[in-house]
Length: 98
Image 1 (cartoon, rainbow, N blue to C red):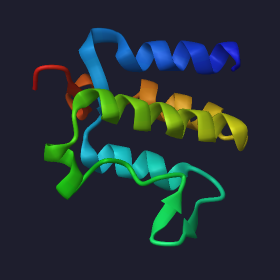
Image 2 (image 1 turned 180 degrees about the horizontal axis):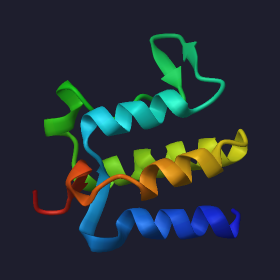
Image 3 (image 1 turned 90 degrees about the horizontal axis):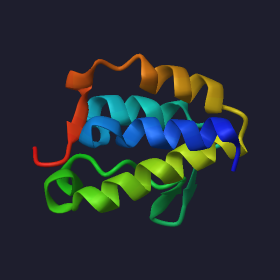
Image 4 (image 1 turned 60 degrees about the vertical axis):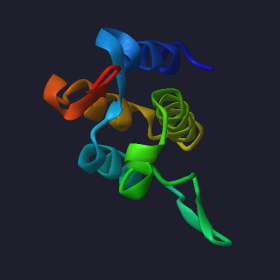
C-alpha cells in the first residue's frame, strides 16, 4: 500500500465520513479502469447504492469504498480518484449517524 493510498483512506474517514453519497459514489466507480462483468456481478464490485444503500451498514460501505480505492491504485488511477474525492463538498459525503 502506498503512502498516497494510506492518506486517502485516512481522509475518507475523517469527520465521520463513510462514503460518498450515491450519485457521487457511482461517478467514482465509473472512473475505475478495467471494470468488467463477472457472472452476475462486476469487478470491482458495484458501489452499495440504490436498494443496497438503506440495507447496508456503514462499515460495509467503508470496506467497499476502500476496495474501490485499492482498485484505483492497482490500475494507475489513484491520482484522479484522490483529486475527485478531495474536491467533493462535505455535503456530498455520507457520515456516521446519518
